[in-house]
Image (cartoon, rainbow, N blue to C red):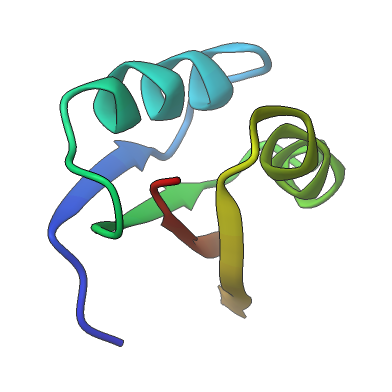
Amino acid sequence: MVFNAEVDAIGMNCPLPILRTKKALATMQSGEVLKIKATDAGAAHDFPAFAKQTGNELLASTTEGDVLIFFMKRR
């Protein structure tokens, strides 16, 4: 998937992956896509909830080994 920016939250625990994502999204234009990489097990539940709460769109989520990867579109 094509993305405009990336957040590497590998090794960070909650709430840091969400906080880093929020900060990155604030610098992006509407419609741009952010790729997030995280290893915190809670991220699988946190990112869909974050998208719903903020109005940003969670385009996709996948796993590569222990790394969870999310693609979020800025509202």
